[in-house]
Figure 1: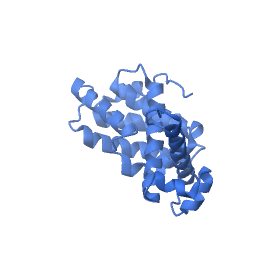
Figure 2 (figure 1 turned 90 degrees about the horizontal axis):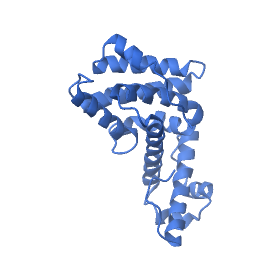
Figure 3 (figure 1 turned 90 degrees about the vertical axis):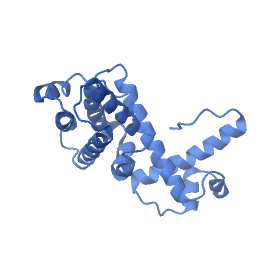
Figure 4 (figure 1 turned 120 degrees about the vertical axis):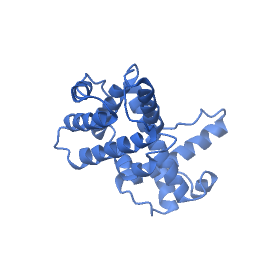
Length: 211
């Protein structure tokens, strides 16, 4: 999924399509094996573009794989955003984010595998779900819904727990994903300052489904 502005003319469209094909190929590699040692030639072949096209867009494989991770995380954030639109309670947004992430192991497995393997380094990223979660934490603190005083520290705890959920969901597909997500979200909400009964109720509210 491209997250840049629409190209203005045919040349720009073709250029954007080539770049996105390379990013998509890198995402596939990350999701399948996580091995970034693939040659540029192999990546170009997978993307169905010419070898020389690579250097028109990226200076190195590291830059390409960084772009692929950023692209995947931004798509992840957009998917969650679309499903929680209309929810105003910061606590419910946290809970829904956990539960929808658990569902995405089935609906968006590639994204979840990249998140599991690469997400830790991006917990405080400027793109993806992180800025959205930080915004919700700050709103929750400002409104008194959350009693923790440091949104950045809270994001570290929330992000680490979410990544643990992703790993659990992918490694143990036999478990009830929604139950695990709800339980972990409840723990996080209690850590953020909600009373036990309140945290339990919030994490069991009807959940918007994934497309």
